[in-house]
Length: 240
Image 1 (cartoon, rainbow, N blue to C red):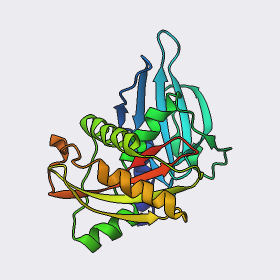
Image 2: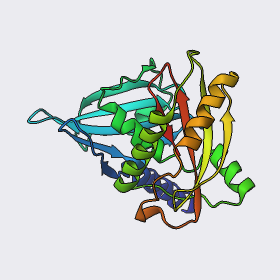
Image 3: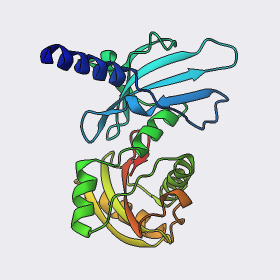
């Protein structure tokens, strides 16, 4: 009897987990209804992520796409796509043991909006936790549309101030910002291996001072860490 009850509980829990969805609208400039299921987001490691999106353009049928992306390389792969229905929606089974060809994400692709949104949800990476502990800065949740605008503005100013050398190398740097827009610290989490490139990135970081102030929804800490990847060859993007 106890075994039957336990089995029933496991089956019920599995059903709830499989059906859990949390669709969030993603602002975009493509005049399309674009949404991401935040409950489908699965972090394979600090760089690779699975997630599912829904999209609809004008009167065309609504589609679903299951995606794998790499925030470090800027590569993305479409695991599976098709018409969207609640009954056929199956992110967990699609992502299980998924294999997909990855290629660079194009700047003009609407998938850029979804990929940037997923990047902004990376609040539990090992790198971020280690640096937060080291500098005694609490991690902050940055979910919300106002945060997307905040990250986009910061990234835009950094690119305007970045004068990269000719070398096609990339680096990742963690920047500690105060809520007032002050630059409190920065630290490479992945050096480029090229001194000229590293200097150009540091110059961009320092020239962007003062940064814009935090949006209202994230003012629950005096400072926070943001991670930016500077890559000349691939599409530039940032995560925090």
